[in-house]
Image (cartoon, rainbow, N blue to C red):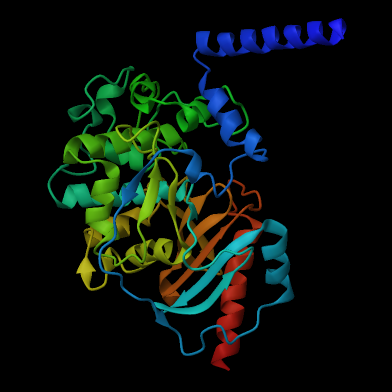
Length: 385
């Protein structure tokens, strides 16, 4: 009995020392990560984590109902897509043809009203907000220096950094985009309680506007610029600029770094449903126009869907780019296989939400990504016969 008591006391001392060291070395955010992830039975990020964070509400107004295709949910799915859904944990899969929902699939008790985490699809939303801020005169253009709004950015090339560089992932910032290490700045940004000083401590160590390098810190800094320029929270500006005029079906939530006075995690974490996320597909597909309203300038919407750098054709401004059988494809992407895929040539949107994805490479979006597109065309072709 005495031995067990000694072991218990020793264990308590060790844990107390570890916690003290985490606070001393500014790694206390790891405790929140443990609480949000491991103590809820997960091993990594997951789609239903929003309740564990403070949030701002993105208010909707009058909802605009989606049209249903004449063949809505009439065409059976293939064994391949059924297997992909099951293996990768798809919870929502939509095929939208000519702005009408052709196919709609939900699993695991999720439905058209279920909200899940967007993860990095939010980066595309931030670029849409940038374009809106430019159209409303808050920001002059894509060449506007970041230090016009965030004057204390450091680094040899700080004065050269523009908002366009942040949107196109050509920032030159000293940011480590790591999802595996709990000690990385990416993990700290996701779980820390004060993201602004973390971002302001970054340095522009490489010449910006020269090459593509995907960095979540660039999007967070862009969010801070938009916040400063518009004098609004990102959630309020998103509500006013897109959620209300697009006719979203539900209010959404945007995760914050801390309490209600905190800042949105601009690089991720808008919680909404598949139908509402698909409205952003319309935004890009129709060159900035939704519900007969030109919400962002046509020229900027087109520019976003073109590669900025010829040696990095996979990215434009806030959007991933690829080709499918010679057709241009624009898409929003989240780390667990959140996709809003747009194929303008065929007026087609494919939205997928779920727990896992195939691993993309530098030259390929991933096997799952191709499967979702293949299935859409196969089903549409079947309906057309």
